[in-house]
Image (cartoon, rainbow, N blue to C red; front, side):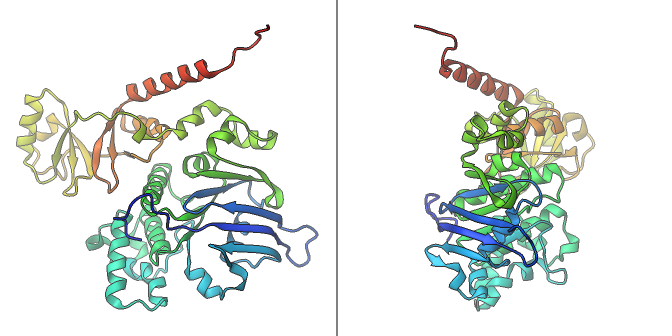
Length: 394
């Protein structure tokens, strides 16, 4: 599906698992016992649970990296267990922790693997590689000929997602794909996935042990216990408000009210548009004059595609020869898909207001602490008004 199509277009398909069981030889208990679930088309469903509970095993049975012992799995109405396994896997994108890239392939060659296996002609493959690199925020001119060892962990994960989506599969399976990167990069990758999903509307099954990640990403969350027993399968807000039992409540943990911040997005609040911005090619002296005229201390430097790069103080422009090196690189930023919790964490890293990026990483404004605090206060008042009075008798 072209990203130019309507965001309402759903390219994903429904997945249904019926009484799926996995029993390994020589074990008394099944690893997965009688698992049944419908994953809606075009939605992100997150499996969350403790290590060893069977969540990864359950997900891998969807693309038959692990063969079910019994049960039925349908993908878009097709019986997955009756399809040729290679054909099935080429219809399902798969992204894992630490990307799993082929080390001796370039970025472009890694992304081109499945389209090549499907017999696409060279021009179509090259066009798709360029499209996917742009989609995940990697400039093809800079990155297509690099090898995985020449990339940061976050860049490798972006390539992994691009490779998983290259053949335009309706289903994407993601097995703790962001678990091996630092917290800031992890937040940015989560935002990137949500941005992509806004355009692509794939059916995504995502495995994590991090409940906060599940709340941020999931349209629905399946909290799993031993043998992949479903303890609760519902929307994030429903699980936060009403955990099904003590085990689920343990996953929610303390500070459930603070986790409500992960249900609110930066796009839901008003952004500030008063920061002075300058493209990296502008003259430092001219930017300094603008700051002085507008009585501002900082300018936000943008690259040629209007993506935030660095903050520069008016004092640092006196002797600067280029905006590409003046000031300090951004420690953190957020996107319109980010949660207000992400924004608060970024404010702590940046020490003040934080740049916000749009659909293609372009600058969209800034978010400030007073905006977040006002939003939280408003929600608190609304919840107080909605709460039934206690202790009232007729």
